[in-house]
Image 1: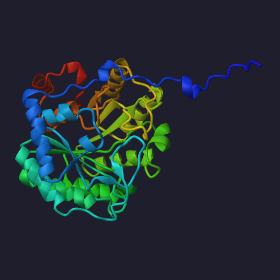
Image 2: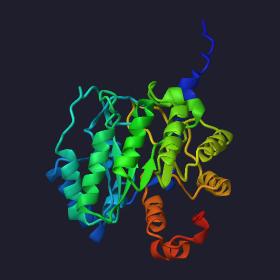
Image 3: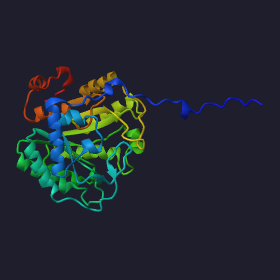
Image 4: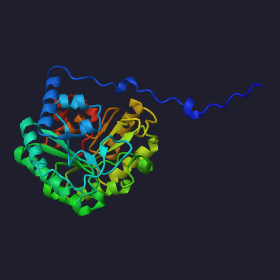
Length: 328
């Protein structure tokens, strides 16, 4: 007897999207390679962690080759387990390294940088979420490098407003960044259950109200969102007076993490940039390899914070004027 053909299982026939050519990363050469090696050696010597390595950022060679990095403080273990992030998850049980603020300050003093991004793991095991440690680290950085501009990419401090205000008022970062990560609909499937999209927006609003000159957030795409959902998220961020927003392609760090639903075409990223500029964001970085901590956005913010004009910024960094959206 001949058995009828078994219907194809959609899970077996559905092909995973292939990584397109525009996501290829070039390795550094020459002076850029030497800077990459020097920065890596300095990190190891002072026992410091970077989100560049922990999160397997595709831009690590480009950024480190240019002498910039995102320093991750409060250890290398996060108390949350978001499905997009490869940083280790666990319970640090209240441990913090009291030497870290001093070590970070000294290291950055040695590197003679103009702009640095300071990020953190979520520390729900600490009463203040690590706010005092972050503020102290910023102060030590400014002590060793008074002219260094510091952007902080921070957690939500469990939605405690006074902890957010403590970082802004005591640490006085030049830029306060906190990422909503995805559009609201994907919040519960991609971020840890202890995260909240609305709370994240409130954190950005509180930072602005506490005196932050520039606030910033980031959204990953390629996780199943629609364009309309992205535009809606942008409008909600702008309503909270967020100044800078970045968009980048989500890349699955390991097989255990959320899958890439699609690779977003460069033209769609262009539409997000144009829409963000029209909404009034001071700067929009939007592209396949753009990440929350990204050289283009940092270069622009350096210009704004030092009083550099749009034309001077475009000339110095080789950016076409149409990619800049400055509101004064």
